[in-house]
Length: 330
Ligand SMILES: NC(=O)c1ccc[n+]([C@@H]2O[C@H](COP(=O)([O-])OP(=O)(O)OC[C@H]3O[C@@H](n4cnc5c(N)ncnc54)[C@H](OP(=O)(O)O)[C@@H]3O)[C@@H](O)[C@H]2O)c1
Figure 1 (cartoon, protein in one colour):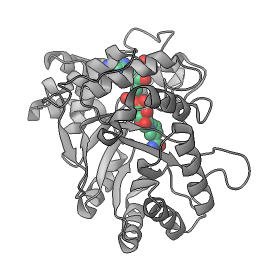
Figure 2: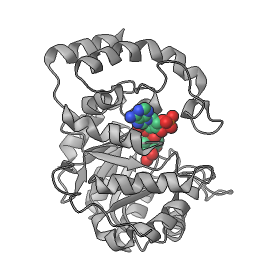
Figure 3: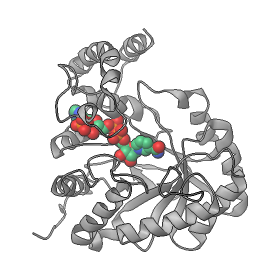
């Protein structure tokens, strides 16, 4: 069945925040395809999530060269779905991809050289069947390649028309400043930074949030639910179909136990706020206006729906924030 998006998708279902001091706005909630869109997953489930997301005003889908497993398969699957459902809506979508982690063997298949980044972007475009991506990221800093070379590769990607904007991911605060200065000099401002940020992972509060604000760079927080720990998923054990139970991926069963005592306490506050644990974790990130978008993952339309209902309560009292802080720091 051909897909007709909901006519009311822009009728106040989603808020859009300006990405730093750029001309681009992003939805407060964006959808990432790291998990649940690979060759090991059910394509029609991913397709249903993408359709639902777009119907609800999510205009931003985030990928990377290595998403799968196997690496590359999330981009391939996205390409299949894009062609069937989203081709007429290309101008309504912000599609991002990245290069930085291991993608092919040999000395040119990872990190931050010009050779790797630009070859990888070409491969990503081919896999997704796109002429261009909206955002192309350096996925991680490379301690051996000169920062100038990596930033020049991003600039080239934009100048060639294969990407509209440049972004960086996982760069520490000081390096972000340097990267932003180089990109500015080249005439391709850094649009966005993509760091890991959640109630459980707060390194960005130690400087990066200030840097992005000063530099006019947007920030999109990845793994906002700590891969599912900051939801009700593990409150009664480890479900068989959960990320922690799967043999692939980066959430290990051993990580669940130590987190759950805190999540149970946090969940009590969420209940008082009449929202799910996941919704509270997302709202907690959105309270900071320097956060342009919260980049969630989901394994079902039901989870996506639950997360999108976050907007029903974005307000935190001082008392709630203090109680949350006490739990997180205990
Ligand atoms: N730049 C980088 O280095 C980097 C690294 C990692 C991720 N990312 C990006 O960030 C995106 C999101 O990362 P993530 O998938 O780790 O995000 P996440 O939002 O922290 O975790 C998503 C997982 O949480 C569970 N979940 C989501 N909503 C739920 C709900 N309402 N109730 C119960 N459980 C719920 C699901 O787990 P189950 O699967 O168990 O159902 C889902 O797969 C990625 O897709 C990718 O685009 C970027």
